[in-house]
Amino acid sequence: MGKVTGFLEIDRQTAKYQPASDRIRHFREFTLPMSDEEVGKQAARCMDCGIPFCHGPTGCPVHNQIPDWNDLVYSNDWEGAIRNLHSTNNFPEFTGRICPAPCEEACTLNLEDTPVAIKTVEQAIADKAYKLGLIKPQPAETRTDKRVAVIGSGPAGLAAAQQLARAGHEVHVFERESRAGGLLRYGIPDFKMEKHFIDKRVEQMEGEGVTFHYGVNVGKTKPLAELREEFDAVLYCGGAERPRDAGIPTNGLAGIHDAMPFLVQQNRRVGGEPVESAGWNAGEIWAGGKHVVVVGGGDTASDCVGTAFRQGAVKVTQLDIRPQPPKTENKLEVWPYWATKMRVSSSQAEGAVREFQVATLEFVGEDGQLTGVRCAEVDERRKPVPGTEFVIRADLAFIAIGFAGPFADALVAEAGEALSLKRDARGNVAVQADDKAYLTSMEGVYAAGDVRRGQSLVVWAIREGRQAARAIDLALTGQTTLPR
Image 1 (spheres, rainbow, N blue to C red):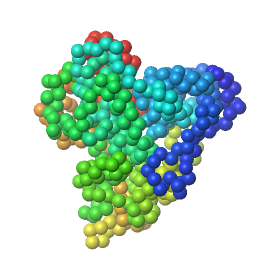
Image 2 (image 1 turned 135 degrees about the horizontal axis):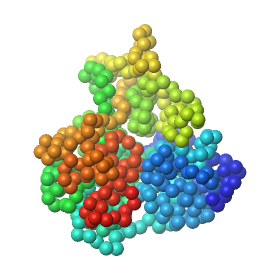
Image 3 (image 1 turned 180 degrees about the vertical axis):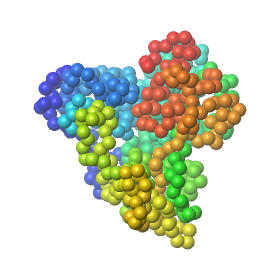
Image 4 (image 1 turned 90 degrees about the horizontal axis):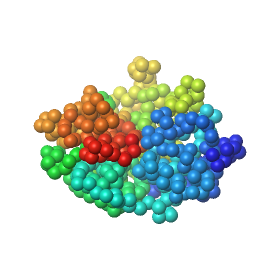
């Protein structure tokens, strides 16, 4: 490493945020960038640890070569750093902003709770590359005669499309919405990642020969059978959007919604798109001036919290059925794996009231309108404890407990009934025994991303898209130079 003793001499620092009182007044990103010199110092903390758990199976799903590009940043070689980073990750500006950074959990320095600021450095590399004009189209030098259709333009679909185009294939991406990105655009709030980054990547990919078709809902407006006839291979990257059923009695009250209609509507407002086209049949949802309750303890729930504050919610309460985790973990028991410990997201830090080990029993109200959420404390088996019931005031409630798989009323249903596209026990699209082939039960049709593995991280979607592209390239040509 360039600075062998860096981890001994330099304290861990990460990018700071705008004060909560300022950032809740807008929907823009609020991270304050570090200077190149500061980023270089953080990269210098990457130690010569011998076994870099950060980019193994315990750390980074795309196997980013973290020690290598940390060393390049320390040496002020930004071009070399982005080249190295792009060799494993098509979109580091996405992951540098929204990945929870399992790599930092796996860092050897995390044994002392001072891991290398990997996520901060990764974002800095991508942003610096844009500033220096280093992110340009990389069209294939030679073209094949093969045509591939990609259904869905979320991170899995985008990664696969870019890899396949660079392998020389003619790639067409079919997207249901009016813009590319999937839930990366419509689900993740702009204050976590502004959407011009997606637009820049789309522009790059168009320069590489990828054709995007918007407003095409395969399975509804365009049959899957047509794609199979027109293309040599079809890759299904439809995502997992079906909300998990919470089983909470709503009593027919207005003001109770799944998380996604709320987040999608706000992202459309920020993007200048009509809210009514968001679908979901939810009507317009607005948290301004209301007491809001969010059921769920994950990232989507946190996104609801931050969005509600920015719309002007009076109070936001977040309910988590899990017990409050310890402040720190036992390193000897869990390192280098992701640890269960107390974490506070930027949205939660904006003033959310967090209730742990609480079950949501039912929604209550008057004259058809939600007025409160009846809850109870739970025991270690997550069963309500008698006599602990209480009611939290609520004018608006969001259920954010995750996703159960792809919607079954379009492509999956059409293919399942007519063309034998099988699903697994969890309702996801099943692939053959060799899962790295990503081949479904239907000849020439592949599946990758959340639609195959279930709800997961953006970085896993990128990984799946890249692997699926390799599998398709190998199947079409008999050989491939695309990385696994």
